[in-house]
Image (tube, rainbow, N blue to C red; front, side, top):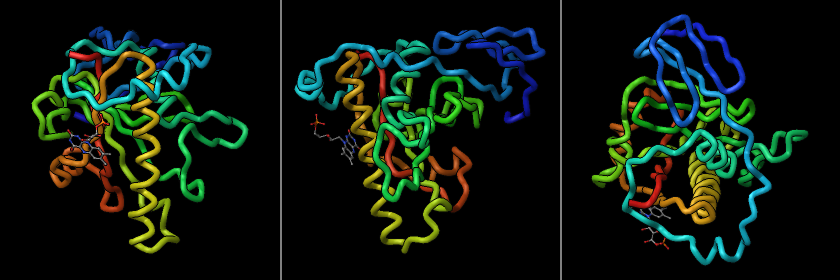
Amino acid sequence: MNTGARKVLIKNVVVSTAAACFFVAGSIILSFAGELETVKLAAPRIDKDHPFLEVLKNRSTRREFSTRDLSLQELSDLLWAADGINRPESGKRTAPSAMDMQEIDIYVATAKGLYLYDAKNALLVMKITGDIREITGRQPFVKDAPVNLIYVADFSRMSRLSAEARDFYAAADTGFISENVYLYCSSSGLATVVRGLFDRVALEKAMRLRPDQRVILTQTVGYPG
Ligand SMILES: Cc1cc2nc3c(=O)[nH]c(=O)nc-3n(C[C@H](O)[C@H](O)[C@H](O)COP(=O)(O)O)c2cc1C
């Protein structure tokens, strides 16, 4: 677990010195079993035509999921919609952020491992090998749905605020990101549920977060079951 990996990134293909071959979310990844990996995300399909009011009409929480994986393109679009950079000149994002602190990181728990969404470089950077989906909630579907998003506040980016203000803004900023995910799922025929009920201590431990990082909410995404 967690051994460093030497890899060459070629377009959407991550190649390591190893021979084992895996398909992850539509991309080809060659790596040693158990190695950390980096996945190059696809450019978002921002030309998709989805009337906005129809998207709102269909927004809902759903708790039945297929085990079918999201494609790399679907996952890339989802993450960009959630909190991607939509104004590269300023680095600002699809979700608003109090004082532009951008303190919320999105972690992505899949069957293969736990990744951190690097919006600036459009990458998924593996942090932990192995499946921690089950710990992202208390409901049975969380362990089988393909993607569980974990919204983590990095309080080191909010050090000028009081603890009360920090908690308030971290929660508010997470809400905007989660709603973006809801709207993306509504527009794309995906199911989603955001969660406040989970074992925070167990999840933060499994994710090996620093003491100044806090899980705010988790959110399952997948095809409807
Ligand atoms: C902050 C927050 C926390 C939530 N936590 C949970 C949860 O732990 N488990 C769950 O099944 N749904 C959770 N939900 C989803 C709500 O139950 C759901 O949004 C509500 O029933 C309204 O349904 P709708 O989203 O379809 O309008 C949460 C929603 C929010 C906004």
